[in-house]
Amino acid sequence: MEPEDHQQKSDRKVKSDRLQDLESKISESRKKRQPVQENRANASMLGLAWRLTIEMLVGIGVGGYLGWWLDRAFGTKPIMMLVLLMLGMAAGLLNSVRTVADMRRKLDEQDEHNLRPKGSQDE
Amino acid sequence: MPGNSNAEGGAGIDPMHQFEVHALFDLPTIAGVDTSFTNSSLWMVIAVGLITTFMVAASRGTSLVPGRMQMLGEMAYGFVASMVKENVGLEGMKYFPFVFSLFMFILFCNMLGMLPYSFTVTSHLIVTFALAATVFCLVTLVGFARHGVGFLKLFVPSGIPVVLLPLLVVIELISYLTRPVSLSVRLFGNMMAGHTMLKIFGGFVVGLSSAGLIPLAIAPFALMVAFTGLELLIAGLQAYVFTILTCIYLNEAIHMDH
Image 1 (tube, rainbow over the protein chains, first blue to last red):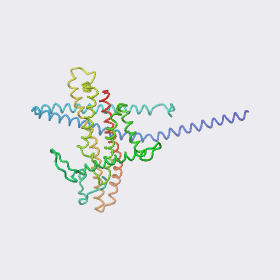
Image 2 (image 1 turned 135 degrees about the vertical axis):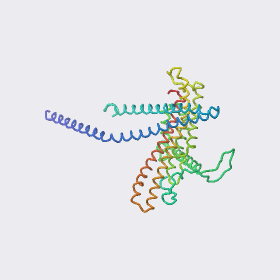
Image 3 (image 1 turned 45 degrees about the vertical axis):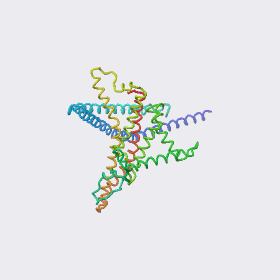
């Protein structure tokens, strides 16, 4: 009986050693894969920069156009255009702030998903 | 449009030539609108024809175990359907046919534009603006149809002192009006910038190699290969962005939550 028991114990020990090995290997390869994720984050940052630029320019453009049109309709030459240019800038800024807030929320959700403790249910 | 240079003597390549619209055959002007069939119309017709062929081939002879075409069709359907369900909810599936057509049309136009000697329909602001204006009108109509005058509450931010309200309502209104413009400018800008860049690098390659400096032409050629890949990515991504923003706007019109 005794020798068999001993055998089992050492078996278990080997097993746990191998499990630990595997664990460290996995975490190592995870670290290696991190740069890829960073690259993707950079690419989406570039897209965000594009979007914000367009958002702000378009705000000014639409404001200016509306002002010009109202001026022509009411004959109030420079006033409406000046006012609406300002409001257009504000609208553009509002839009870009909303875009960033949306982006932030999405990134936070992603982080939460990624940072979930290992070994919980789905892994 | 990689490499399809209309070389007018080496360096004299015009990167904007690819965006020229010209009539293929003339049709009469009706009520001040020139109805001539242009190269732009031709590529739109090709895109619609290809989409129809694709969907018909995908849905013909459907079986429980899908074949290749059916698989592709189901993937396209599933992709857009999940996008609509996630962003608008199940009520949004009413508008699925519209969103799906929009996505497929933009995707096919973008992708066809990547073929040499083709014409990129979506690199013209008026085309993308027509698409965005359609979305804008639809969203506004849906909003008013579902909420009546209550839809105007969208322009009244909550929790704001009354003094500031008139100013903010005007700003919200302008911000709402900028939607179709930013939607169309984004797609148009991405497509035009990318294709111009491809053409310029293509011009470098042709110019340098026709001047006998082939070793020097390797660097711009390598860049062009990379940019072509990037352009393919952008072509897909911009179709996706256009569609998802449509979904987000629809969601706002249906549920009115900011």
